[in-house]
Image 1 (cartoon, rainbow, N blue to C red):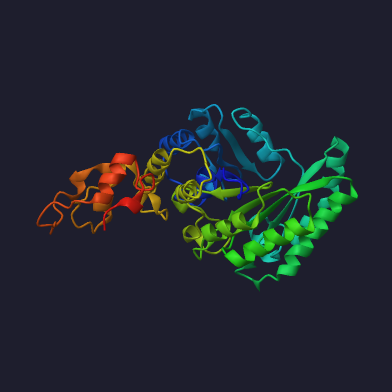
Image 2: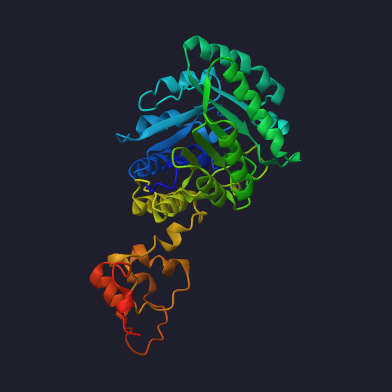
Length: 383
């Protein structure tokens, strides 16, 4: 990883955030197939589902069966969401392969309407629960903690959320931990309603790190209703120093959404494959096999029966080496023809080709000779 960037961790939410908004009738076997495919991509943290009421989230009714049938891969961390003691009891049967993040945390939502819709609690009830959480953590001897601000970017029900209001809620949570002698080292920012923008995200990150130097990790859970999630994540990345860590939630194909946010399946998240491609092209090694990740994204599209939001599965990674496009490639117009990068020339066999004679290129010769044009001294190419 280049020194100018923070460390980056990807949390893939395909099987939880993604599937919770999709058709509840998706066969279990297909979910197992997708989870196994994701496990083989090199992603290191997969959220496999949630232990919640099947009455209200029927898409998660088969989470136990999914965990019984999939094949865990060593080195991959598998987690699942729980919201109450009953969910925790159900999850306990599957640890391992699941791991449990038992770090103490305080949570509050900046929008009182959303938290009522999402968890059937008020903001006041969230705040009232803080003292018991802090006391329990102190009794266990906790030294570090997390604070979580939900809906701090804006709300579909109350409109703009003042930046200062979100910072005040963070200050109140951090102050509660500091009063107990516990250091806050992680801030989680959630944006269920897709109000994030690059400037607002950068402002949050910059001010949090400036105001609370003990915070070394920022965790972003950004929804993508307005198409800004990836660029907002990039703004956060550029705003953070190299001795910090940025955690980014994503899902293949950009699927995902909350049934309580008012946008349904159009909510979306950062597409994992596009995020990985951006990181790799920026010199940040994600440790992920991009070809396998594209296959997983296309598998998800096949299971859901529609084209998803990720761009990399449609155009492929940037071609280099022996994956450079043929110079006499005909007109490519359709998405099916554009899949030649993985499906081969048969997909454009009937495409029009106006080239009267073979195309030749000194630059292409140099690229093939040296492995890339960048490795050749292009200044010596005759003009």
